[in-house]
Length: 180
Image 1: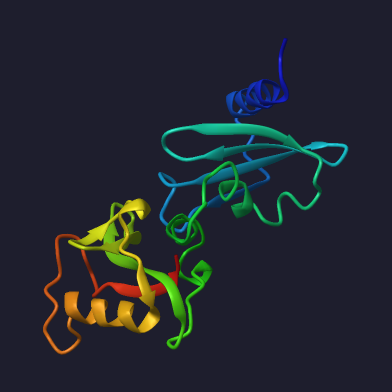
Image 2: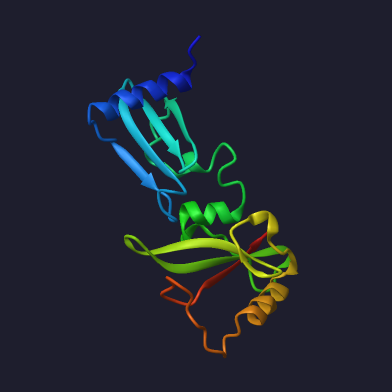
């Protein structure tokens, strides 16, 4: 018995084989390795969608006529984009919801590293840990207020000291304090 996902995969394979380009596509802010969505209109208000990252691709058929309007949403489903770090990697800095400076409650720090990639400038996102930078949200240090997080950022990356760029960096990192 064939399910919808298998049918969608077969349709996408056939479209790609015939060289039919998607009607719409979205690449995550951190690049195609982190997330890409492709959508083809197949008539009768139906779309076939391929979405995923460099590890796995998912396929689906959608009857949502607005499916092309928010392709990023496909990457923020099925556990992808479950926390602020993944949302930042998909949506970029505009998708990061920072807390106010006087916020009291559990917070973490997202670090946006400004790096060159093979296509020019690119970004990678990670979080502040007890040892510095990590791409693993589960290792993020949780602070009890935005003020404590801001103090930790200053401890790790003092604003009054010269920042020495690491390999492939083109600017000092940016920091975002978010609800944990």
